[in-house]
Length: 252
Image 1 (cartoon, rainbow, N blue to C red):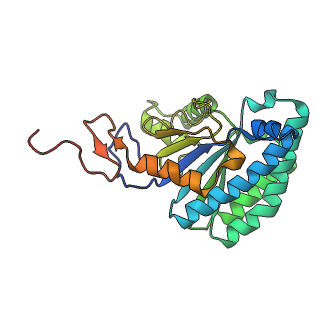
Image 2 (cartoon, rainbow, N blue to C red; image 1 turned 135 degrees about the vertical axis):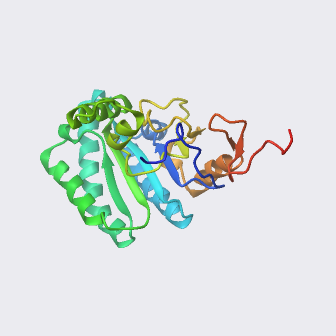
Image 3 (cartoon, one colour; image 1 turned 45 degrees about the vertical axis):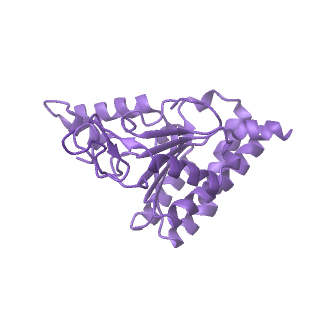
């Protein structure tokens, strides 16, 4: 069973080992500049690159990005079409660079709604980079937290287990290959998790910023890391500092 913050107190450090990001604000960024919404998504891809570089430079081994939720299909058809073409373009242009830099690419979410060529690109991107040992970059696309739990439950039932326990469900969750996120960042000023990783975020530290995603750079990323480093991670106990030391003095 991978680390479970409800079952065992994890090792803590001043810097997170897994950062998840809800990349919000692309449309508003474009609107503020009197541009079509799709231009915000295109500009947001630059922030993806910057975030990958930041994690690589700062030895953060896991980065998970919420790119497209299961609810985002409700958006205007032309915007959804552009996002699909942007996925296609980014995979074709970026994955080879990721591979050169020892980055492992993973995709989580329900792939069945994507076109077959795009599904094939997801598969080939994972296969190309599966042996890499550096940063694990995970893209959540057509992903929903409730779908993730239900999907894991179905797999557990198909497995024929007698009792569906946390351990059983955990190994069927989409992020079973990674530790639970230490830090969740949401850009764009909204203060909610929007059906993202609701199984995995139970003890994740949350950081919300008004900065719109295309403006999220290494300086803004470092602000989030500094905020995390100064927090007391408790996991139901009296308290732990981010470095893992107790905040309860001996004899108190």
